Image (cartoon, rainbow, N blue to C red; front, side):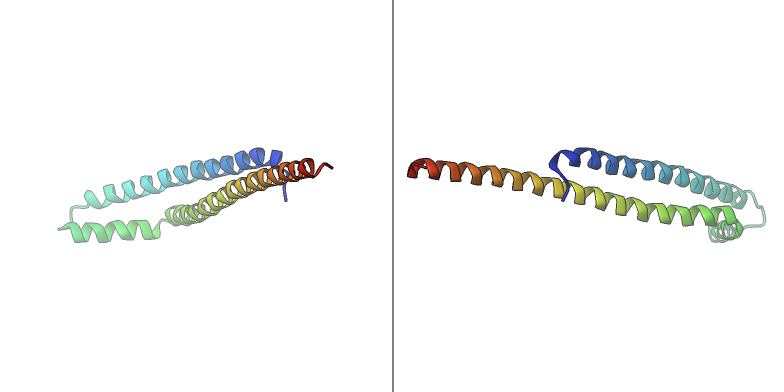
Amino acid sequence: MMQLSHYPSVIIQAAQRVNEIDSQLMAVQQQVHRFEGNADKIAAFEMDLKNDAQRKARRFEVLLVNQEYQKSVDTQIQLITEKANAIAHLEYLRNQFSVAKLEARLNIAQQLTDFESRELVGL
């Protein structure tokens, strides 16, 4: 078990890791949105497409063959999972810290009770 005084720095490191992952995730989401916007533009300006269903199908085709888009989506999925795990780890550390503080308080209370009991007996 970690010393009580070490928890704050470990917790801040875990929180910073969540923020780093979140920043990476936002950057990848920007890329994904750019690829999707480009696919929308391509589908919107193809004159032989007659309705929304055809435009959606064309958009899907454009994105399907774009390897960079596929890589970005895969990275996005990976980062979402990493972020969820990092948040779970952060919460775990926070809960451990709370338990450690409660155990320290209980220990102090027991020591005080033991001391008071010895005083009553005259030890």
